[in-house]
Amino acid sequence: MPIINSTYTAKGLFKNGHFSTIYSAKLRPVPKVVQQRERLELNDGDFIDIDWSFPIKPSSKVAILLHGLEGNAQRVYMQGQAKIFTEHGWNVAAMNHRGCSGEENRLYLSYNSGRTEDLAELIDYILEKNTYAEIALVGFSLGGNLVLKYLGERQTIPKELKTGVSISAPLHLSGSLEQLIKLENFVYNHTFINDLKGKYKRKMSHFPEQMSTTEYKKVRTLLDFDNLYTAPAHGFNDAYDYYEKSSSLQFLPSITTKVLILNALNDSFLSEKCYPIDIASNSKNIFLESPRHGGHVGFHINNKVYYSEKRTLEFINS
Image (cartoon, rainbow, N blue to C red):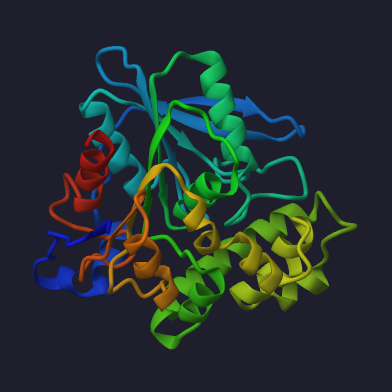
């Protein structure tokens, strides 16, 4: 019965989910970690950029990190996780989703909460290029949903892939959308939609037959964006078809890899279905940890290290 009684308790203002979320994203000093960029040319003619970090000594272990919606490998949570891994002898491959590394991707399609093909291609590339005894997957928010979906939707995965960790992940996408459009989440929703509209506008000049100013002006919510761009660009009927098919919750019972789901109870992005108590209770592989505090990727201990970073390393090494 892998339900974990969390030892994490926030202090002071960090007990407030919104404070821990905003502080951790905007105010925490960025941990210093050296990154080396490599471009992976994909089979469909597009590309993704990977930011590598390395320990002092050569390693036979690599952690692949996946960021959240409109993030990148330079986000503070990505750098913090990369730092603790390299300090403990792991190579780190921080994956930038298509169009998130500072350069627009080449195709009309981009990335989304359920498109695991790029992750699969990256894993194959890493194993072809290097000899690794162990691979770990760590995803944050949207990236956490991708990790779980990847592990649950495939009949086989590489034998080197030993563990996965999903942090602050919206396992049920339509439920999380309903959370995000609530008034209490106005700041986050407004930030996301501004970033996504900017991306839409930049893409519009490259794909005038599929995108237009008229459609751009209709984008006022995340649901609008997913209906007008995400769904048609990635072969879904509409936004809710995308949410249903891309939510990792339905794939959890098929996961045979040891995974940790770390979702705080005061994460305002998550709905009730993002805490799969029944599934974890009946699984040998899925470990669910739901501390009272932590907000959305905001598990503050101090500015140097976060609980999620320590817990991820501990779980993967256990």
